[in-house]
Length: 163
Image (spheres, rainbow, N blue to C red):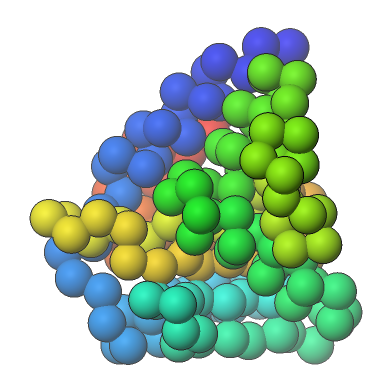
């Protein structure tokens, strides 16, 4: 199976999904939107939003495990370092038959290239933070975060969703 279509779509997401501004109110709206999506799907998730190295939103729904918060931390660390979604990083490493550990010496205890953490881009500024979803299969974690970001950015999700 070729990873190229997904990798192209992931790059498109990071190009198109840009906020005009991102503040505490935006973080609250984004976090609550993801919670509403998880409620509607009947799937408990943990959501973390960090801006400038500070956690500005955190919510662990009933039915999640403490491990979900740890997965969120590890995925978020990867995005904060790479400024690319954790899913994209993972697929790029899979394509290249490589890993964070082998290429950069990063410990798996603190970094992972599994989907669910997405950079928060602000037009004219760049990456200001990360939103992370944990509790679903990695592609689903990623897609939930992207769908909520697309909605808040006014981008039709069909234009950026994975195929």
